[in-house]
Length: 601
Image 1: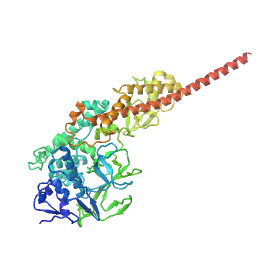
Image 2 (image 1 turned 90 degrees about the vertical axis):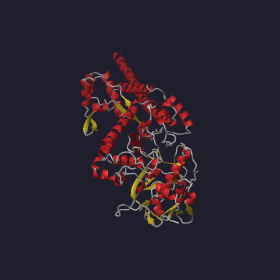
Image 3 (image 1 turned 60 degrees about the vertical axis):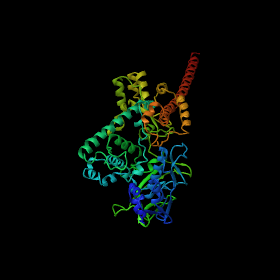
Image 4 (image 1 turned 45 degrees about the vertical axis):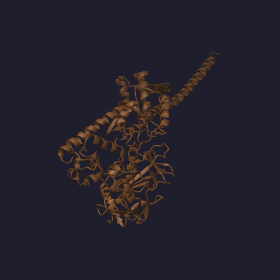
């Protein structure tokens, strides 16, 4: 009987564990209470064997109990196959030291019934939700140390950005198939990332935003151009023997003989990194298994990469721990003995905390719905960071004296180190409207004050009054005219949409009911669902795309309507002021007339 230590098991590539499990080996359960004979499991799937081997894992003096998902070895449908992939992924995570004791993933017990993560216990602010050891991260450092492609980067470091190295590494590891150490993670990634770049023309037309559709076209062109420069002109031309087809001995039929560095695979890697990579607070961009599977909300979260010997206790305070160990051995030997191994931690922060049973979110950043759609394929109905670019009608060929009057007002800031004149600021082609604003943007009002002055005032009045369009017009009537014109333009902008707010709301409610209450948050498209998603948009069969488009266009219209209400409120105040001024003028005239009559008497 051959005994394998837990450390040896943890360090083996997944495909080697599969091969050895079919021989005469016996793997001890890690707590030493039960043995599993692999020969007895010869007819079982490798996933079952691996699950039995790692059913319970001790890390330091703490024991992590794994949920055992026994599945039938005769599964023949894709949904069950996806469950097997998830089981294998979770087993791989925990077998290599990941900690996620307080969350359940995947779970559909979310408010939106979209696959996400749910708290199994209360999670306080600054308490770890997930801890992922650095060896499980896909990073540029992993690319540099790769025995196959690392030398290319090491010798030409100035020619490759961190993002380029991560792109190439992801294609390289994916091309290995099951022989890749990261295979359990890579197998869970959607084969077609959920992003606007995977929508077709009809799907894009649902957005009712030609500007965003143009942005999709430009990004697709950028993707193709980057592939040509990086892969075809640099990698394949410089190292043709290394960056070619996958070896014939690749472990799975899909990878065998295929080109890991094809445009299709590059596109997958590009979109995956765009949607999933962390990096703002890290020394590099990185793919973090499990942490990239949480749904998005506008919540406060923090993440950090720090030595394993530094951790947070359950109350959020810092404490010292022994190095993570398994069966008396260091689980993650550090390549540099002078520094300890590092662990990625993800935690809620600020006032954010989760009660048991609540969905656990992360934040993808302060994103508008256009950005959320471009990178992640969803939109939020209550997105506090939403903004809408309102195009201006334009002042046709403004007279030179009018331009001079604007320029005389000086600068309004700087752009790229160059002073921006008031004329540029006021007469720019569009102005942003922000969700939740309490007043109309001052630059937008200044534009319509300038438009009113140009159309209704002469040169002498403008020059003599030295009007500052960022300030309230001295004449309430001109101020009212400026806001009235602005309101008319906003109303025309709303009317220009193919559908109204009311029509979108009715359709959205129907779509929400059909999708069991989804509110447009990120939806993990299952691998068996996303085959041919581009065609699904044409036929109108893809409910998630339709729902995202409805959410996007309705939110934009609501932002414009909200600002129109602010304009109407200001107009009401101005009209009240004008009525009061007229009343005062009338009273003054009456008084003057009375005085004149007295004098005559």
